[in-house]
Length: 214
Image (cartoon, rainbow, N blue to C red; front, side, top):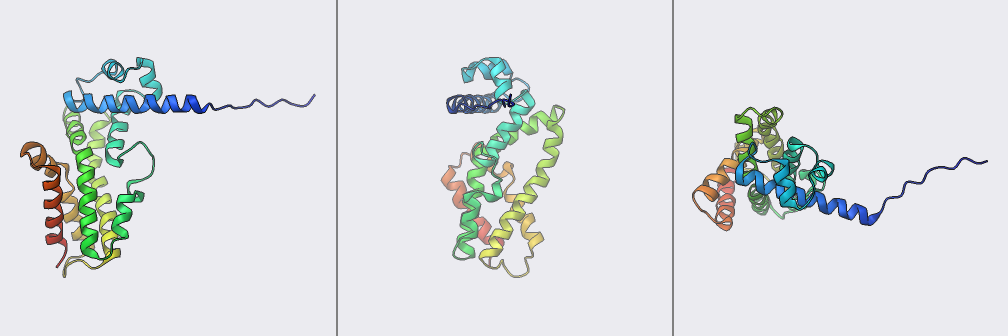
């Protein structure tokens, strides 16, 4: 008799339900982490706020540390899609800008949107790292390297649109841009000083233009 091979059936409905559960878990986890910090947040609280069972949290994302890392990844990228930030439309707009000034404006918009999502989560990461949470402490240490890498992508996109100010080489431009990408800058102006998102974005645009262009 011919060998009968098992068929692997993937239900679209089941996939949609799994995606919805994961999205609910990530949204609930972000809210709780930002509200009360990493240490005070429990899987039980996340499950309750997401409206799912505790096992569903583990199935949809993983343990508490994996949950926070996933929340951080979504905050950096803007969604749960695995597409790298450097390949996102907001970075593509910088490359497609008609001139270096427009490219800087698009870069400022990209950074402002990123920090609005990410800066509060970065505060949670810093607190967890300071408390000695294993794994997250190393993640905090790597954040500087990640930011420098991201700044490098943006500077290269700017250079594709035109020239930086005289005497400013790529390495120094990366340092400058990396500084203004620091989450603390956003938190100081928006969260602590009460600037609106529009005010922060406009200030960032004008400041980057002053620092990077003639």
